[in-house]
Image 1 (cartoon, rainbow, N blue to C red):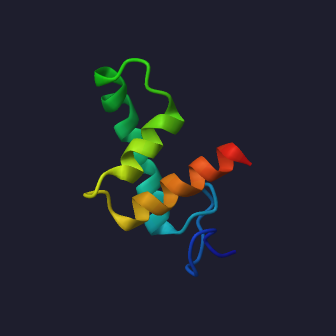
Image 2 (cartoon, rainbow, N blue to C red):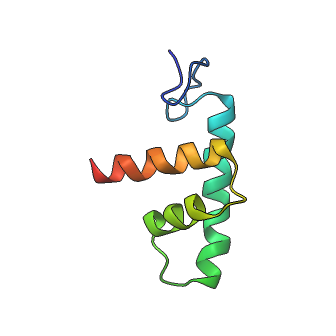
Length: 73
């Protein structure tokens, strides 16, 4: 099975490769930190803000965009 975002072999977690899985884990672990600062911050809004940051890495952006898109569909 291939990663849903690239050509690499997917791991079991969410269908992402090792790089996108690590990016997803980083998003998940960063959310509580943001939530402490922005108390009413929903997961989708957090993802949108992370996407908008110029310092956000490409793999994190790709995962965040996929997660947001999955929420909309």
